Length: 287
Image (cartoon, rainbow, N blue to C red; front, side):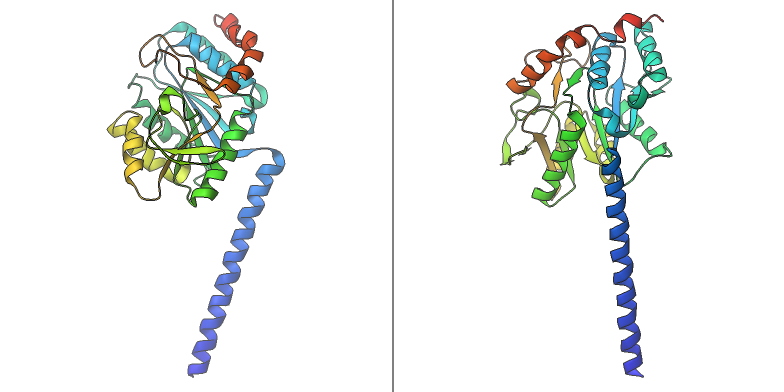
């Protein structure tokens, strides 16, 4: 009798191990299918509010980048009233091809940092939402490198391996950027671990979405720093070579001064500065 019980237990664990192995295989196949198609399990979110000049620069730099690899691209507008802003949003919602954005309009303006939790609510409501995927949030006054998403995603995977954790918020600004000036905790080839990272250009795993949302509801983006820094096995990181550059200097929540000391980024952007100075949507905003 005892022998039979032991045999049943052994068979149970063999079946359980086989099921777990098969599930791991399925997940690997799903990952490979994303990579084969060039699509990454990343939802890109751009927050917008009544800054048409900066918004047009942000969108046009993205249209020249690899954001077509994102599974979803969303602009979340926090109740803009400016007609130029609204016209840009209407144009980008109609066009863009494989890089087309979905535009979500908030009926009332709830403010810069309260709009982020609302935007995360919207992302989770999407039928295409992937709890095992990633979210990249970026503000509407930055320009990006052509390989922005690919490099940010790759650095995140490198950080996850090196730190043995996916509890990471990864900034697209470099460690010397004024937004990220804080104590360095660890330094690696492709990223730094820091005491805090500023500005809103984050990539994080969706298993952290509730934590990020609760942090924003309590404070501004620095609330994310305050909460994550205190949690064990949670990391605030930034790339070693900037993938974004801040262009906002005028208006509420804009930052003034020199923000990017990454010479490689400046060289890269000088190649595309003509396109950025003449945004595709700036000349058609009254269509």
